[in-house]
Every structure is written in C-alpha cells, then in structure tokens.
Length: 269
Length: 116
Figure 1 (cartoon, each protein chain N blue to C red):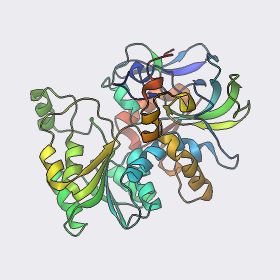
Figure 2: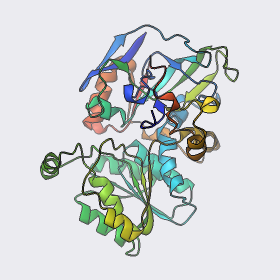
Figure 3: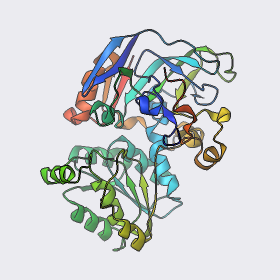
Figure 4: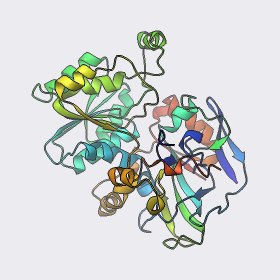
C-alpha cells in the first residue's frame, strides 16, 4: 500500500480502481471532502479545468516558489503546459517560454498563454535558446509537462530498446540542462518506470532542486476558483473540440494523434 | 447510462453500464454536465499504463449533485460542483504525516480498499 499514491478517478486499478467521469453519472467517494460548489454565473467551461490541469500546472509553479521576476521555461505546450504558463504569469514571472515539437501548439500557446515559444529540434538547440534568453544562466524554473511518452525519433526509440526502458526521459534531461545552477525543475509529466543513466552528476553539480508527482489539487482549488471568478485568468480558451459523449472515441483518436489541431477535448454527456 | 470505457490498447468504447449507486455514507452521485479528456488518459489509451478490465475513464468532470450519502453534509441535491481529480480521504485519512506534508494527495489510504 505504501508503494502507491492516493487514488484518482478513472485511472486504472493501480490508482484505486474507481470509475471515472466520462459518463452520464459518476459516483464520487469522499464527497464530504472533494467537490467544490461553483457560482452560477460561471459556465462549465470556465471552471471545468479546476478539476486537474489548472491546479496541476499551478503546482509546478508553486513547488518552485515563484514569487516574481523569474524566467520560467515550460516543456510541453499541451493543456498542462499552458496552464503552467498562465500560473507563472499569475505568480509574477518576468518571462514565460514554452517549448514543443508541434508548431500548432506553440501558435496556440502564444495566444492563450502569452508565452514566447521555441520549436523543439533537439536538446542542444533548445537549451542554447533558453540560455540566450536568460543572460546565459539558464531558466530559473523549468517545468516538465510532457512525461515519458514524448514525440520521438527512431534513434531515441532504438536507445530505449537497448536499455530495456519504457518510453523516454529526454524531456526531463532537457529541463535539467536548461535550468540555471541552483534552479528548480518541476516534473508534472507522468513517469511510470525507471531510467538508467539518469544524470545524477548534473543534479549534484548544478545543485538542482526537483519536485514532481500527482499535484495536490485540493490545496489550490479554492484560491484558483477565486482567480477565475475575479477574471484574473481564463481557462476555457484552450478548448479546441467540443463533442457529445457518444463521440468520445473519436476525441481520443484526434487528441492522441494530434489531428485537426486538437489541443483539448470537452465531452458533453 | 452511457460511459466511455477502456477495453484495451487504443480501444475505448461508449458502453451501456449500470447507473452508479451510493455505496458509502460519504459518497455522492453526480450527473455529469461536462468532462474532458486529459493527456494523462492517453497513457492508459496507449496501453503504457495498462488497465486489464473495462473501466470508465475520466478524472476531469463536473456536474449536478443527484444524491448524497448520509455522511455528506456539505452538499445537497441540485448543487453544481467541480470534482478534483485526486481522491484523498480527507479528514478520515490515517496517514497523518504524509497528509500534512503533501496536502493529502500522496496518501495511500484510498488506493487499495473499496475498488469497485
């Protein structure tokens, strides 16, 4: 039991085996503790992302103790990366940079997160660009918002076969290289298996501080709801597709395969 | 009711399943009005975090309270709520030092029991 974290809705038998909410009805255990009432003047789409991706993105910034003036580099222009960017602005970052392999997602991130963008070509190019944008030091904070299944080339895939590894830690490694000495790396992307050759020497030499894991949504949700209600931040601008629940399998296909410029799918039961 | 369930690698289907029921005094039943697909759902969809039996996915959802268990005093039928994705047990959790340190998200107490 101590090997596992707390449960999540709809996240396999490993995480409690509770059915999730992509359905007409959902059973909500511990309902005296989790659900939050929302004001009638806010639409579903304005508050839906308080469930996960906004508190998750915010946690990456909060763990790093961002309090104003920091250069924040976010790897991954998906929904969590964009939410981390919005959170970085809320906490007073001076510069917010988003990195991704997909130009359409960077274009969206520029619109929805007011971020500077870098198109990923390779680790060195990205690290060089981030250093040049931070007086040569590297970013104060790097946020890993991709996880163990990034877009990958053939060489990278071959390497994990040789190393008997599942997925890739290449985005985490880029974060560790792009962060300044003594900087903070927040790991929001999911990692579910070990990686050998982890650069522990770099962690030690640079004095990097790292934190990751399932984000404490309950810790932040009330103040984040207040930010939404105040109009300090807008969350619904990341939605690219709205589908009835009956078309959910299509939603999974376009989201996974990045078809039709898909960034975020909302389902209506 | 209709629910989106995972059946295998890249195989999700909208199935007809039984409506959920209150199983514990701390449960509520929500009529879902909006729900989203999360990037982390794709790890399950890809088979990278496998799920051996069909299961309804989705940890981003909100809706209207239909029914509450006897122990739920803070909600009533008709309330409109968002449901945070993690399921910590809250005040009933016994792993107190972990709870204090991590705002309850990493507490193991809800993972093992009561799988349904």
